[in-house]
Image (cartoon, rainbow, N blue to C red; front, side):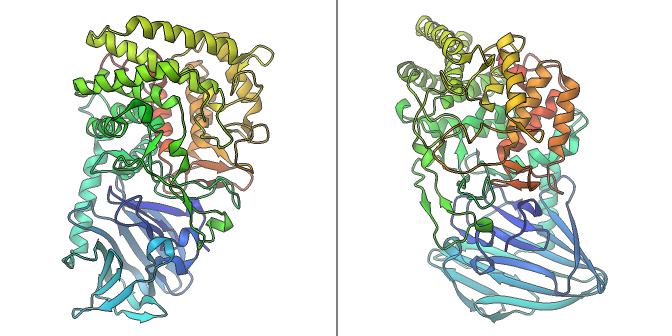
Length: 610
């Protein structure tokens, strides 16, 4: 049985990632990239579906941490024999992708067991393993090859590779696992200790920018470690060759334990665009922000009526959804889904996100091209023809399109930002028409999306249902936070959508979203409330909620998509980019003269320019 979600830590090489438990077991790894089939899938099944465990043979207490400012996990095991330190990391990728594990004796004399179970094709395919002349093990399955190198004694046992050895104080044992195409040459050996130093240097150099005193950006506040860990996590979830940022490195971790709300999040969502840009740019990471902006433009390029809500890490459009029937699912949560059918939905909010992100990139001084402006013009023109249509909304419901209020708000954002971008660049050809549509959308939302008896905007036109996405209305500048309708919406959401102090997306009993069952509290929504409270001047309440959310992080500072308050468990895909993006932006609310929410609302930078 896999560990609790919160018992995992993330390691990665900025092209893929692995989850390692506090018991020394790597239970999830997709090779060679985030969206590749897993070769270790015990997370969604059992050990026979692939894992790699290194731990003392006798029961041991464990504690762990990330090496400061890095993505290197250090786990200490202690028992009556003594103690050892397990160091797990993935070097930043060169020609091949490597996973390195180093065990060091700290005290006493500890007996160690290693078990490697490789199962390609999401835990189904057993590879052919051969022993080479130098003792190297080579595993091949179809197009995939994995090479294991170590000085530890190895043997095959029941379709597994195992090892047993003893470490005394000061001794160490290294293991390296390398992925390469099976039809290529055998990868050359790496030097684990040298790679450890290089990987440490890479991450400490990268993360030092967050608090660099010479920069006018970065973070200088009460939550430095939380912000640093979140930004390192976002970097780890970035596919370096393209700049795309995956929503999470996992699929089908359930939003409710034992339930069916299990989705593949190893793709890049357009709706995360603006807050991602602001988090990166405000922290001083312009290179990463530019790479994300460029991925966004390449992915959305083409006919504007074919814009999708999400794409693959390289901009792939075909994300066919299917079910893996040979995996049991995390704690019995089935089905296990690969791909995501929501990629074919109409969601009007993405047009607003793209326009907003492009405007803020321009305000930040990121270099733009005429073709970028032409794409924005085409997308805005197309939106002018379809903004009145129902869609599946920000939460990707599978019960059919509806007139979602937030979708219309973001359609308004699309025209508002396109107008401001055109004004900055002297492109006045469509401004009269766009201003008229902007005014029409605004008037319609205020008339049809607001319920006077509830004193709140509602999830869909004419309904009584609430939706946490409405907390973003003042943050995107649709109405000022002082507006009584905004104040009423915030108060009504606080009264009706908060469960045990955390915000739910919506009431699953009231909305037929096409998927049965309940879910946990959506962590990003609670961070949105932090931003709304700060904009209202309720800073003490905002800080209290923010610190409650920080307490939900696991012992190494990671957050999943949702939190199950009843079981006090992290649920949903892990770690979740949107949760960490929201954490960074909320932390900035307490330290900057102008918050990220106010930046979006005013469509300007915090300091005049970034």
